[in-house]
Amino acid sequence: MHRALVNRPRLLLADEPTGNLDSTTGRHIVDIILDLRDQYGITASSVQAKRQLNDAIEFPGGVVALPGLVGFLALRSLAGNDSQWDEEPRCQILMVARLRQHVRRLLGAFGLFLTLLVVTTAARRQVVLTFHKNATYPQEYVLLYGLISVAVLALFYVSATMAIDRRCERLLDRYAPIPDPGAEDISTPLKRRQDLSALLGLGASWQNSFQNGIVVFAPLLTALIGTALPK
Image 1 (cartoon, rainbow, N blue to C red):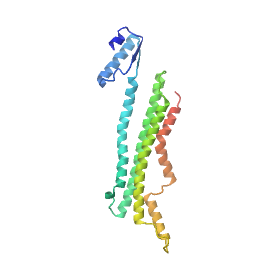
Image 2: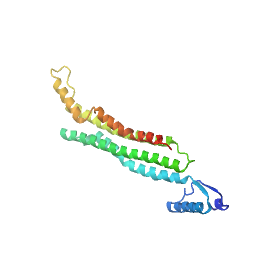
Image 3: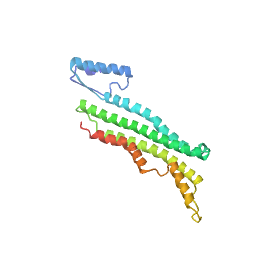
């Protein structure tokens, strides 16, 4: 660094000047560069600032997102574990209702968090392009972030929901089996099966499916809106 500054250049290009330093020493080096800029009029450009900004947002985001993924996996495991379903029929139906409720809550919270991450990424891109006219920050980066968020959210949500649906189908076959077509009265058992199916939440309405789809695709929609904003 001293060799780069000994002739007092007009332009200083710093390639990760704090890459191998701790945070305290790194901030000290950055302060020195800024002081030289103000004192001698040196134009300084560093790639480390953007990388630090990426790490400051993406690393905490990944850490906070981890409990959401663990929550989906826990619900999936609970729905598929036979040892947890030895209770009486009423308790089993209540367990299904609670599982579906927890999945909806987790989907909403996790979807909101991923959407906020995409909003932060889009806002960061706007800030970089506003204050650094020659900076390159392709909009595909924001779109990729939104696409990955949708894929992760959909994967874990669908996995948990399918496990709950399989459990509901087993309960339905146990407590309201399909009647013999040759029986004299099949309307009563069919009505019982239909009522129990509705109680277990099988065959969700299109309104619920639409609402869940909006939550799942919210990060990608936000990314599309963010990239459409003028620079």
